[in-house]
Image (cartoon, rainbow, N blue to C red; front, side):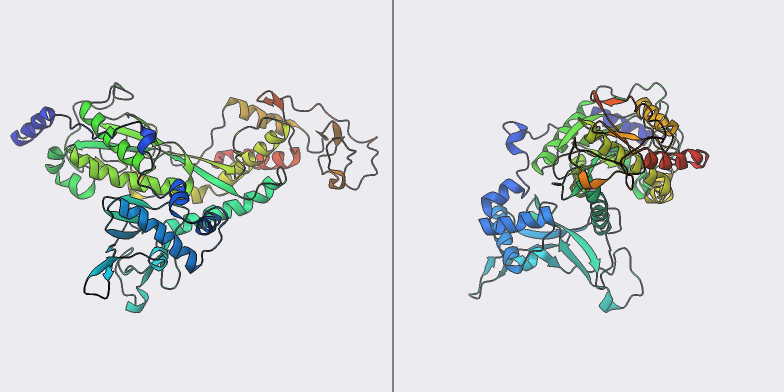
Length: 507
């Protein structure tokens, strides 16, 4: 190690923690104060505009120009109270980051001066240059135009003096130039496919939401030491040098006491996130030296993704205040853990039912098993697509190490659910199933008399089941102390196909 590096290390150890700027009162007092959320909508929008906007957010209805002008008027009033001077359409191009172009709110007033103005047209759509997203090329100039369009399902927020409007980003001819557009299409496809199934159990269901709970791992490096490493500055990871004298062999950093400088950085980050309505909840030391993690309460996937992008921006900004540089590269150092972004994913209905959680009664558990086995089947069928979605050059550096998954897609079910599925496989496919105390063949049920407690019979049968296979005992498995019944033929068929292909990486 050079003399200069020794001096830099000594300097970094002598730095004092920079106290976080803590607002007065409880977290709930300032949580979401910089977000135009539903409480702000009720305060700043008239009833007609409010109802139209909520119908757009909840049911996907389109907004007319009059409504957009009304929303923009309310947003402007709220933003001016926070001393906003600029507005930007905030989007996520194919650069693995965010992009924004700030425009001032001023316009000529016709009297030699200026006036602050913001209307529905500026809110709904803008035209940033798309020639460099994702990169420059030989495209014709007139086709290099890009459009940003407001995404009402992700709330507008304020950063410094700028009103930030989450948007999608598309080309002149309609192709997606960002990550949000395909995400929203995928979320709609999931809802369209899942809602009809949910309505078999609950007619009041009109939409299925995808939920995401992300985790953000990162390294903190003193800015002086960072500046001494050109490879780290240019690529985000070290390319040369010897191993650290102490790595993670003792596992003593994981969940250890958080250093004071880092703790103040985390407090500042949490406060900034809470003011922006980001429900940051967990913070702790990770496995590798100087590696840490934060995680929020889970939320709707589109919003959660926007919040993760925003948090990464905040981390880079706030770290400098505390004399740090944040490393978000998946594998910045050889020999120690890389930084993953684990995603906890689920589905839920607009009535509040979580589809991948066991129900509280037999019907709820049947719905749970229905979605459970279909997720497993989807993982098996589309495992190549799932792997491709994370197959970046940077992420490939960390596959197969501590905590990081191997280069396959797998599903761990736990002992209880594994036993349930194996028992289902052992049941003959023509075994009758029990519904509301009656026996019926697994091939189907007469739906003409579907009220619970009424007579039910196998489809196409006269009602006399004598001479058929003797009904076997129902599966004695309970969730939340309630029995459940499952359509054995459909479940067994999917699981047998999965079981036959386990050697090929079946989930």
